[in-house]
Length: 139
Image (cartoon, rainbow, N blue to C red; front, side):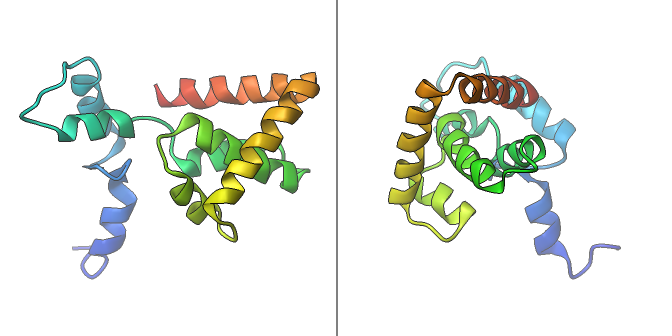
C-alpha cells in the first residue's frame, strides 16, 4: 500500500540492466541460472540478458567519482572511457547518460584516454585497478 501512485518509481528502482524486474537477490538468481546456459533459439532474450549482465553506467560513474574526488574533469573522462570499455552500451546511450555531449564526444574521450593511459603509467595503473574493481563488484 505504501507504493500506490509510485509504481513508475518502484519499477525504475527495481529494474536491473533494463531487463529484469526484481531485487538484487532475484537478479542474482536469474544471472546464476543464465550465465552458463547455451544459446537457445527459442529464447533470444537470453542473449540480451547475458549481454546486459555487467556494470551499470551509474556504478561506473560512482566508483570513479569516489576515487577521484578532487579531479572532476578526469573523473568524468575516465567514467566515460570505462563506460565504453566495460559495458555493452552504445555511444549514444553513454553520451545521453553523461549529458552535454554527442556520441562522437564519447569516441574522442576514448581516444584521448587511451593515449594518456599509454604515456602515463600512474594513470594506467589507476585504470587497471578501477577495471578490476568494477568487474569484481559485478561478478
